[in-house]
Length: 117
Image 1 (cartoon, rainbow, N blue to C red):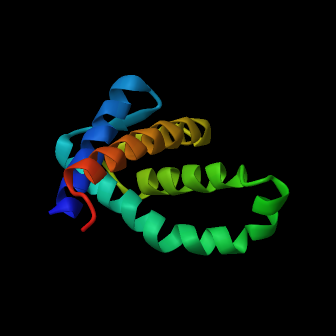
Image 2 (cartoon, rainbow, N blue to C red):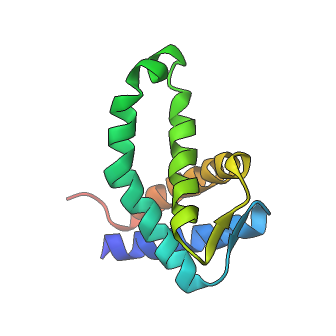
């Protein structure tokens, strides 16, 4: 149940993001659901691989390169989807930062709704 609620709230966060920032566009709630799923899938499958491959750069930049990886995952999701678009890498960076903050708020709310047993 928690996974479905998180998915719906993440899609809502994408729609909120389009209202906050003009560099990201989502055509409908259905597109936001698919985009939230793809972003989550990329972050689960591709992001760990990229983090390991870019570990030296991440260490040298004191972890700041992880922002670039997040932006790449966000931008890649917009590249494979029709109803979700990002205008460029700068927009992907800003959009992924805002989306990450919204994701932290969602996680915090879900921890209160579904406490660990």
